[in-house]
Length: 250
Ligand code: PEP
Image (cartoon, rainbow, N blue to C red):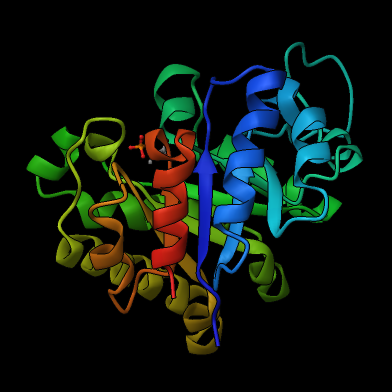
């Protein structure tokens, strides 16, 4: 049985004290979760978060990772550095990285590969912009991004991969994909994985939905057969809302 995964993407929010407080509030609310629970915090909060999640069922995640083990890459963080902070998951290729920081399909692939080789699990984000959607290019975009992100991966690596389908127009906008739309596009992504790695690997892969998932719409989205969890931005910053989402994932 696949276990669903709910991951909070805190983005550039919360200082150390707020991190400690938010995790303290979330922990008792999600202690009986049936799914995997992850919080992906800013790099500077990793130490505080690592201490706060100790003894809970919350796993620690980061929001990016570099492909090189070390070197002259100002502002970047390596997989080894994340592992030192007991990070288990790292988000790669979030649309905000692609949009604002020049992340490409190739760099997403390089980051994901390095993270997995070092022993991290990755949450690889794919998703179309509004313009692409309106031009009827959703399938083309998510298939291209999926194929590119997984380029050079061995089948065994896929056990460490979660894909997050995040339509860019739904992120932080309050506009959510309908549960049917999200389900259908995730099915398309799974088909792309099946073409590359076969049915068993594709069925075993967890593919989340992300984009304005909240306490009100989570249960419907998470009940869809193709949706194996959620990547949650805004609603992950409120303990009660995040917990409702987590506890909707059966
Ligand atoms: C995200 O940042 O991955 C995300 C889904 O954000 P939000 O839930 O705020 O739309």
